[in-house]
Image 1 (cartoon, rainbow, N blue to C red):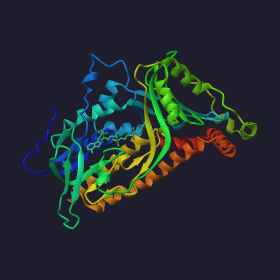
Image 2 (cartoon, rainbow, N blue to C red; image 1 turned 180 degrees about the horizontal axis):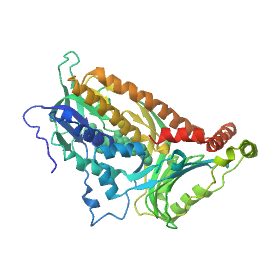
Image 3 (spheres, helix red, strand yellow; image 1 turned 90 degrees about the horizontal axis):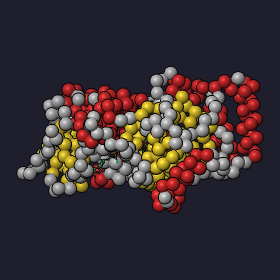
Length: 449
Ligand SMILES: Cc1cc2nc3c(=O)[nH]c(=O)nc-3n(C[C@H](O)[C@H](O)[C@H](O)COP(=O)(O)OP(=O)(O)OC[C@H]3O[C@@H](n4cnc5c(N)ncnc54)[C@H](O)[C@@H]3O)c2cc1C
């Protein structure tokens, strides 16, 4: 049964307060809830919206329609969800594994495909509805006696006394009550109130793109184990498997085009998606002849054995009613993840383009890192708000997040241009990477963590 916090009659004190019970915040709370070193500490999660439940996915009734918000989850993230005891529930509810990913360029013949066999893994990852993951996490939260959960309440302001080392950090909530904590975790997403209230810097850059999402029915059922992504000059379009005959669409495009995709009839939308995956775009003879020469060289030096055969993506039959929606795309980064008594995790700290399917996976890695350091600090009897160990969290995560953000941003820029030298460079880069197994393996190992 969900417990609700009573905050009347003065501030309530918590050792750790997680602001935001979304994918990343709820995952951190579950990770902390299972630490024996914190069993006598008081923890709380504040979620601005109503909590989600797995009830609607009960055995007797699994909704036929998929949510249009899904995430590609890496095997590393799935292992974390397993460790905290929610992966079983997710598996029992609904998920789809994928074993292969094909990426190709609309402006050339270049393509690359990644197969789980290349890294001797049983799968490349999973596609799971965000609602299913969050519902499983919210259910799991109920099992921790030391965690209070408050729903429909937001952190609005924070106050700290920087001079007094023993002090608490005070949070004012949207219902005007006050909570004091030794450590506040800002897991409240890209527009984080916690980050703003703490006056922490945040660099944000709009891609001037919208991600159009939708649930699509495929023309023919198949094992549907491949994730597809084609780079169009206006942005990438991706098809992520949901079942044998359904896939989820993420199409990053200009705001005007996104608006028209949402407004057009279902049939016209399906035609637009099918042609985006198959339509011929203008090709440049210099790029094509360079690619042909490169392919000949690869064959001669024996790299051809590793080159993959291009496959056509499945064709789309239908779009699920009311499943179309769009989201603005930004790059966002806070150069500081911590302050005394405060740490940012997930999109509150870093926000990336969805083309590489890494946003929530980076957030889950934040969870692993921070939970380990909190465990260590609590074990040593340190103040949980101490900058001493929080700085280690910041250092470790910046070292991992910044290169990933730079790689994703660089790839997006490289692929959304029709400037011939760049089209030439990326076509050759894709083809070379496809042919050289060790490079491909390194990329896969980096992205599947
Ligand atoms: C179209 C699209 C496709 C994507 N696909 C992928 C993918 O395939 N793989 C992947 O890894 N990532 C993907 N992402 C990124 C991923 O969705 C985000 O990285 C992820 O949702 C971040 O989780 P979070 O918990 O940090 O933030 P959020 O999901 O934004 O959750 C924040 C939570 O905090 C609550 N909240 C907000 N303010 C307050 C407050 N003041 N007090 C209390 N609670 C508050 C909110 O209600 C919410 O529940 C995609 C993103 C988009 C837009």
